[in-house]
Image 1: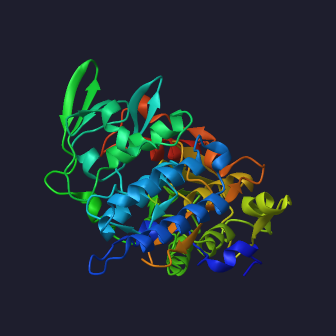
Image 2: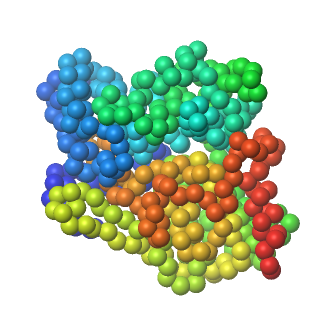
Length: 428
C-alpha cells in the first residue's frame, strides 16, 4: 500500500476501477435513519469529494454552493430511497461518468457507459448519436450513428436534460450538457425508453427497451472470444477486465493464435473497467522489455501541501510474447482500465489503435463508505496520463473512425473491416 495523506485515515480507501460499475445493488429499505444521521453522511460525502476529487479544475462546479443547496433539500429526506436520490443529484454537480454510488433504486439513472446502448454528444449545438452499442436494444430497433435526438419519452431534449444538469454550475458548459444527454438516453431501470430522432429531415421513433430491457441483464457467451480471419487472429474481451481469471483465459486463446500473421485485440466491450493486474498481464504478452505505460498524479496531496506527487507504472514481458503486427479496436464502450490498456499500447508503440473515441472516463477511482448508512461511493482521486503527458480522457485513436459517416449495422462491423484492411497492408 502507498502512504496515504492524513485526512484519508478516517475513510475507507480501496483503490478500485470496477466495483460500482459491475456490482450495483439496490439499497435496502428495511432500516431508516434520523435526519441528523442523513446530514452527517451527506457532510462526509461533500467533504470527502471536496478534498479528494481530482478534476475540479475542469469543472464549472461551485462545490461550496453544493453544500448549501443539498443541506436544504435534506429537510425533505426521510427514507433511504430519498437519500440515494439526493446523493445522485449531488453527483450530477461534477458531471463525471466515473463518479457514482455503488447502489441504486429502480428510478436511478443507469450508469454510463456500462448501462447504456447509445453514445451521444452535442455537435454544432445539436444532440447527435455518435455510436450505437453492438448487439443491444438501440441497435436491434435500428438506431444509427448520425441521428439527431429530438425527444425522450415525449419530452423535448432541452427540457429533459434539466434533472441531470448541476444546479451549482457557474456556466453550463458543453461537457455538462453531454453528460446530461448521455444520462438521459441511458434511462432508468424500470421505465422503457421512447426515443424520437430526426433523420434526413424526417422524425422517427424508436423503442429500444421493447420487447425487453436488454440493458438490465447483459449476457456474454464467454469472457474472451477468439477466432482466425484469413490468417489474422482476433481476440475480443467481454467486459471482464476486473476478473483475474481472465488472465489464464486470455493466455490460452492467444497461445492458439501464435502462428497468425497479425492480431486484432477488440476492447470495444469493456465499459466496466477493471484492475491493473489484468491490464499488465495483457500488455506483458506483447512487449519484449519493461515499458512505462501510464502516469498517475495525486492532486489532493498537492492541494494540501503544495507538493506535487506523480509516478509511472511499468509493464513487463510475460510468457510467450506475440511479436507480429497488432491492431487494437476501441470505442465509446472502452472504459477505464480498457482506456488504460489502449493508451499503453499507443505509448509503447506496440499497436495501432483503430475506432471511435473512447469513453473518456476521468482518472482512477477510490471507493469510500458513509459512516451511518454504510453507502459506498466512488469517484476519481488520481489523474491518469498517457506516457507522453496528455490526459488519458483526451486520447483519440491513431485511426479515428467517424461512425456518423459510415454505413453500419448489425451485419457490418466497420471498425473491424478497417483493421483487417490495415493489417493486410502491413509488411509480413
